[in-house]
Amino acid sequence: MPDDAVARAAAEARAAAEEESAFSHPAVDPDAVAAYGDDPDQVIDFYAPRGAVSPGGGLAPLVVVLHGGAWRAPYDRRHVTPFADFLARRGFAVANVEYRRGGVSLPAQVPAGGGAAEVAGPVAGRWPETFDDVAGAMDALPALVREFLPQADPRRMVVTGHSAGGHLALWAAARHLLPADAAWRIDRPAPLRGVVALAPIADFTVADKLDVCGGACRQLLGGTEGFTARVPYADPALLLPTGIATTLVQGRTDTVVPEAVAEAYADAAAKAGEVVGLTLLEDVGHFPLIDPAADACAVVAEEIAQLAW
Image (cartoon, rainbow, N blue to C red):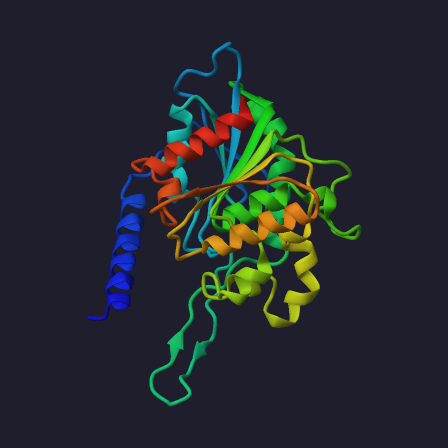
């Protein structure tokens, strides 16, 4: 086997092992669940802090978690509940947000040379519902936290998200920069201590060129016809500078959302006059960032702590 084929096979095996480890942990039930809307997916799981809150005592910083999964329905918030619990055990109060995702399968594609049709799978996201939900959840959080998570201090809020959820975290912090006709626009920056985006789909132009998650960005915005018109409302790389402290954490061997996507966002921020932190982890792929058994997850918790405290 040629050397490049051996290296590729080794990389694929490592990525598969990382994914298996991240998904091997049993789901952790929350301490409370609250609805922010009428749809079954419009809910937030709350985890009370389980460790030392802070050196000075008092209320715990609030970490808002937005899960990934290419905005597709098969991946819901349950797969990041071990990560939410990990953060709670580090002394954070945690809000794990669910939102509506794409659930209708794409039409079967018949290969050009004939043969059996291939079903592409669920569509990524729902326009505008996915964005409606993230905006609605963020707006509802302060009141819900007071009622369901009194141990949390919503004035010390950090938003984190993984992969597609990293996109949503960056977008949630940039709503004050949305076009004037956007329903989700707010008049001033959100009251956040910061954003820690984990392997985020942060630049739609680059992600689309790389076909990240099987064309998920284009699907999220309604396909080719909707992409150009809607990208100004959805692409975090076009919504800069936010004025909110932002750190990206990226595995250098990530083959799901490659390093180039995070680097493109950091470059766009720099051109807009904003410094964005970019923490690159050697020999780390896509899933260790949310895997409590991985050293990378501890790095993520430290990045959050640096902004929260």
